[in-house]
Every structure is written in structure tokens, then in C-alpha cells.
Length: 275
Picture 1 (cartoon, rainbow, N blue to C red):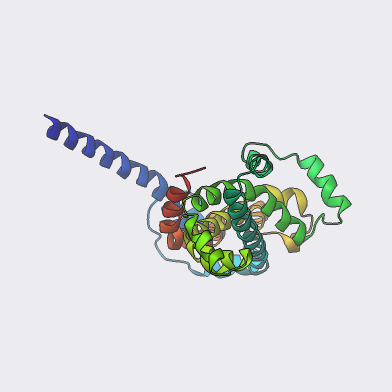
Picture 2: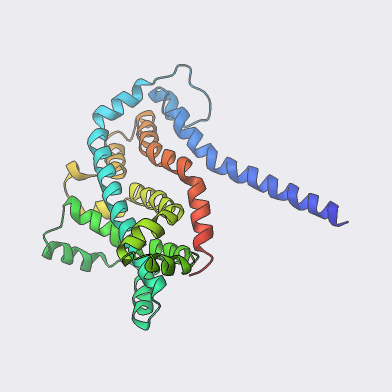
């Protein structure tokens, strides 16, 4: 009886997984297939194959959509903010995890409270104006770092808690300074969570639309998400070009996700042990 019930449950779960996969895959398929159609065929947004493939749509989008400069901007925002996040979070997670004093615990809970707290854009805009960072790339990079550090610290703190303290004691007995102990012994053990943070934050920054919209007034500094929005406003009747633009925008982050999905699962699972 139990064996039959287990098979039925497994069958239901498999069917649900297949249906869920189709829900995700079909929109991507529609985007890709319509990106290589002519304008009249693409306007119907059907799932049918085109009568003739028009790969020149991508070339047109790159030229008219300013995707080269926007790709550079997205890469700069993602790379610098992710480096800043990972470096700060790994150091902070180690210090707070190893020294659980009342002050450190207060700091930790204060930082991770940012996971649930909304962003006050008016106040943030005033801060950036005061610091002369409004409409600048460094300003956007710092915003991304500040908004993504809370969740990243929460995950890293749990992961560091799984590393035995005996390693610290052995390193100190061998004459290591605290900094040398962290960089030479602890840091190599943090590669799984570091990889997880890199992938998650890269996708978060790359896909963000709101922050550049509020804090960047110059189109030369727009990332790819804003470039797509602007391109749609100009070519809203050319769905083949719009689809091609969206495909080129999601392609880099899709590659990052596929390459790093095993790190996401492993890092989050390990980080969830403690926290």
C-alpha cells in the first residue's frame, strides 16, 4: 500500500515539475523564436517557426539599441558592486561569527534587518546629492552594495558558523596573525558561499531596473535593463527587434546562472544550517 502511494506521489510531483518547466520555458521560447522573425510574423507573437530566419535582427538591435555601451555599464555595476559585497560580507561574517559579543550581535541584527526594510528613495537621493554621487557610476555601485549586503551577510554568517573553531586555535598556536589566519586558512574554505554570493548578486544587479531609473539621468550610463526600456519606447511596433533586444539582455545573466546553479544550491543549503 505504501509503495503504491509513494509511486502516485512521485508521479504527481514529476507531472507538476514538467508543467512548471513548461511555464518557464515557453515564454523564453516565444522570445527567442520571435527574435528571428520578420516584423509581420513577430507581431502575432506566435510559437510557430518563421518562414525565414532573420539573424540580422540582433545586429540591428546592437547598433540602434546602444547595447555595447549599456553592456559595459551593466558589467561595471555588477563587477564592482559584487566585489565590494563579497569582500565586506566575508570579513564581517567571520568577525561576527567568531566574536558573538552583545555589540557584534546587535550589529549583525541591525544589518540583516535591511532584508525586510523598504528603501526610502527620497532620503537616499538626498544623501547621494550631498555626497556628489547623484547620477554617477560609483553612486549606483554603492547603492547596490548597500541593498544586497544584508541578505549576503545572513547567508555567509550561517556558512562561517559551520567551520570549526579548532582551525582558528591551531593557526594561532602556529603563530599566524588573525589576518593571515583568515586569508590563508579560512578564506579558502569560504569558496562555496563566495561563489553563491557572486552568482546571486550578479543576477540581482544585472536584472535591476529601479535603481538606475531613479539615480541615473544620463542615457550613457544606463545598464541594459534601461536600454531595453528605451528601445521598446522607440521600436514598440517592431516586436522582432524588441524580442531580440530582450534575448541579448538576458543572455549574460542566464549564462551566469547556468554556470553557477550548483554553487547556489550548495551555498544556500550550507548557509541555512546556522543563522
